[in-house]
Image 1: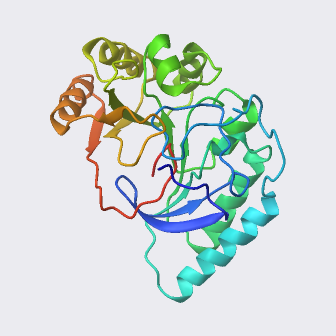
Image 2: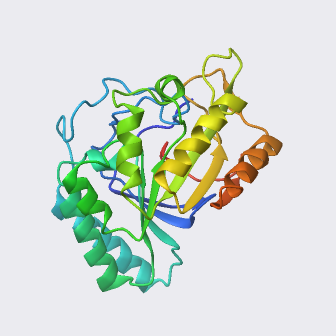
Length: 271
């Protein structure tokens, strides 16, 4: 079963495969998945009524509400000496769709600098809005930018990720956004319709990585029930093979295996 959408701005901390003890920040409307993609592996299920433009629909938390929520949560953590490795903007959809994303990003950094200056501020994004000027200004406030790229060819991008953006637009935006960490989810499909771990798909993806000049790559596979029930995890051996091909390009690469008992609760752009 898909995970239910989050109800609050702050959640966790979650024990993340990739980011340690990660305190989540959800910028999406409460209880409703908002995304401009429709990834077959999304652990929040299929996107119902994909967003076509940023800020579509009601219920977005205000910049002041996000500021207040993080301030209160970090103050409470400081009082009880709680260990937090990262502050991660993620949630149950695409956070950069927020109409006040740039202002919120700057506020998050200001709150972090004031209360918990040693904790990195990170974001998980599906990369589709990275060409927008205000989104780029907002992204500049983050210490770590984890940007999705699961496919290097248009056909795989369309079947795996859905959405209305052209892959070429995403690659053009990422090329000028350095430094970034690429996050790539690899899956297999029992029906043979959706998948990105075959040789041809990997060759195209590697060419895309060279194009955007990623500084680091995170490779992982599904660890939750996906939207498309016929999907299954990619075996560890294949993930390692893919990682070695990335390292041959001179790009530092990390592989993260599924942890079925992990209490992590993150977004589809995944902590």
